[in-house]
Length: 236
Ligand code: DX5
Ligand code: ZN
Image 1 (spheres, rainbow, N blue to C red):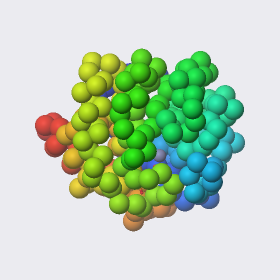
Image 2: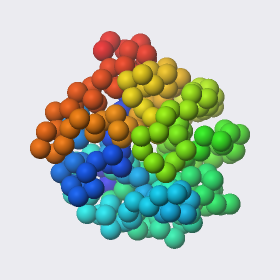
Image 3: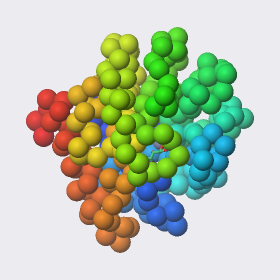
Image 4: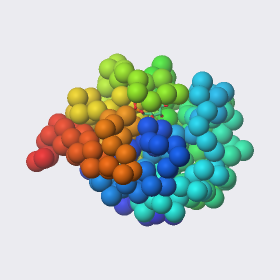
């Protein structure tokens, strides 16, 4: 497991959903070399969401190519039978959806029990009320700013207020707020100003580049980071 010192500094987490599926290892290494802070890994089951990606074996294959944090977003139901497999595959953070089943409390306990940081994801239609009872069990809250299932969708602006509400609810607790979906240099400032610190971006990071031409990844990451940090009041 990679140690994660807690910080609210902006972190850019490229989603390999937008990478070359035949080259995941090289894509992860290229994204990190170009400035990615975390690598975001989207697992979809064709049941909880209408798309299928890959499972724990692929995560295990990718792991040696990632030096830093492997952030695994499970868009699957049920979740519990697969937690150990994803933690054994080397996930540092395992995020489950609050909508994935009736026992999210048990799921979060199981993730921490298996030795990973626990993330809780909320679909755009889900309110923040139930999160209050889970705050002591989570290391990260992922606010979906698209309906999960596909990359390249349009950012849903109504979610910005949800980020503000969560940021107020979290207070001093060491809980990351992650944004997933439609993040680019125009939307990053909105969520950074609202209190988010981890920005997942697929299309906006991988566009224009490839493993043999990775420099565009670097400039794409830098543009998102700069826009977010400006909104946060940091010198960019
Ligand atoms: C959506 C995934 C996202 C997605 C983001 O279900 O969880 O991580 O890949 O992709 P972009 O940045 O293209 O919206
Ligand atoms: Zn995701």
